[in-house]
Image 1 (cartoon, rainbow, N blue to C red):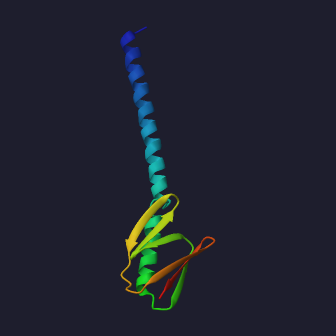
Image 2: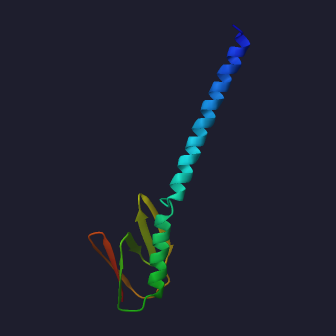
Image 3: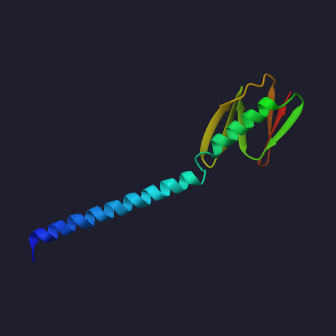
Length: 107
């Protein structure tokens, strides 16, 4: 048997395995980004902050996501990721959680 041919064949097999593994990792990374898992918390925090900015006094807002307040900052947690966004509403905000619903009162 040709010894050099066997060495070349081994390198081709190793290279093929590496290319296939890289392709699978790229596929799974694109799939997780396309499903929105990484951006859901960012969208929730921005949406809540913008709604709070537009809210008038004595308004009660209900969100179906996990939201918390820290001063004028809105923190949203979704599927293990967290994102924060600022709100510019000068009113005082109070938060109340009922089951899976977050209720925010603008006073």
